[in-house]
Length: 333
Image (cartoon, rainbow, N blue to C red; front, side, top):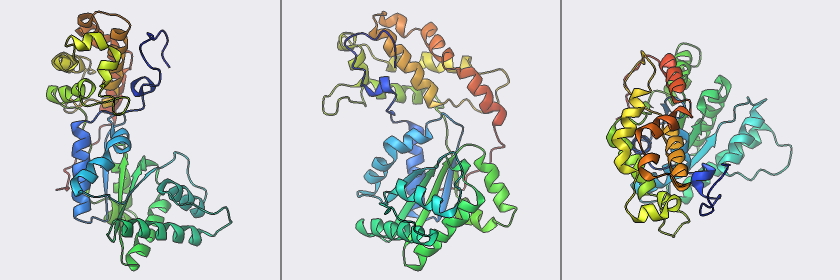
């Protein structure tokens, strides 16, 4: 909810509700990586990266459609955003996972074995409906997974294998997933790490002025609301200025310089920036322009600095730098 919105802005617009995600080069690379793992029928793989980089939104808004374009058919990919709270028991785990996949559990007091069997049959049916013996489960926020839950998934994968069906389990998590892999590998759970976490890929941030330009073009051209209207996001916010040629894309160089300038001192690693902070800054610029600010003022360097400062961008990058693990090479293709 924003105050003092001009009358021409529809409060239901996805930008104002922050219920959208423009397509980004990192999301494309993530989809390509997962697509390669699917091609190879990898039993598992994990994607890790700092928070706010756009992993979850990329999964929610774009992953399935990109994979469908790649394979030219529907992919039996089931997505579960793992809740932050721990599951009390195995039955509760299967119910949570099953509901996310679309299982219609009967309101009965079924045993944990019954719940797992229902999910197994559902995954097999979803694979068969796509003309395949393969299904994939993607776990978002997987850093919250416990050792017990990984072992339960191992049992699910084995059960499907016994029926002649392959299940790949992909996970997306923050940096601490690296430590989970190491802990599993050095404990009695090494077999779980070997099954689900040998293949891995670091999700990057926005890493160049060219990628910033790609993102801004999403607001200028590669977006539409309402569906079928032909109206991109920026055109809805500043219809008259847009008709005169105002675009965000030429701001890419300025925004890239500001992002670099606002990095904390002694920042570790290559400059890769969180998509969410960029999106928040773009939203602020568009709202200011919609309220009547001159386009040159709304998109000037000072406005980008103010817009990013409001997001606590520098503090977030300081936290990322402090938590940055030692980079290991990826073994994904």
